[in-house]
Length: 155
Image (cartoon, rainbow, N blue to C red):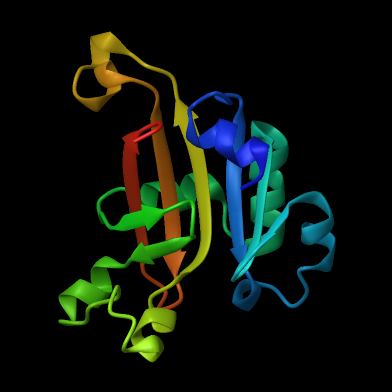
């Protein structure tokens, strides 16, 4: 794993954002791949926050803050090591997106793109924010569903 991504997931890069763009989301990953880490289904970039927001919107056509607002009330599970997810829509349809026997359902509910950021520990906010730095991740699934996940960095 790229050291920038390792640092980001550990909460050590609070001024940066993480972008994942799946091959299915853009016509050509070439330019993005030159600036990021090629992974199984796409490209991951760790960029300074303003540059990252601009790059995300340019590549996906989606404003990351609009994505965050639309995804906030729909929770799913995201794995930013493998860039896999459990879309809440798959669960709503009785599908098991983690079932490798059904590759079609897995691909149908794989993250199309992800925008993530780290929030530094905030004891006053309570909850998981008091436990440590928190990673926020917002995804759009291949099926079009926007969802979010958050966790204490390093867990």
